[in-house]
Length: 116
Image 1 (cartoon, rainbow, N blue to C red):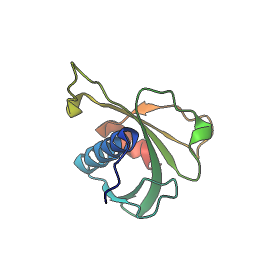
Image 2 (image 1 turned 60 degrees about the horizontal axis):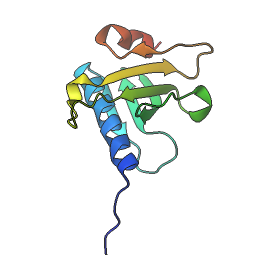
Image 3 (image 1 turned 180 degrees about the horizontal axis):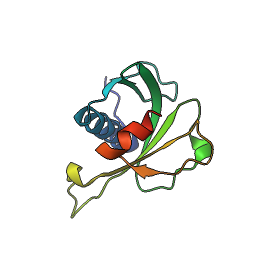
């Protein structure tokens, strides 16, 4: 007997892995959380540890959907003719624990701000 995964679950995992890969490219150590508590990724940079939730898709995700983490990542997948070129995904982030923070593109230049 097998349990079929739902398409949303697969899309969510793609987004989590894309964020994790990009962070690793920028020198940030990451890990997944074994139990589903709302935290998808733990990030380690020097002595700093941050938790994050990743939302993947084309929906607009608001602050109320993300709780009990430091960082909220949004991954927009850019499908092209039924194909999913992963390098074309757009990843944005904001600090949930900082009032009035706005989304920024996940780029090497924004890593220091991510860990402030």
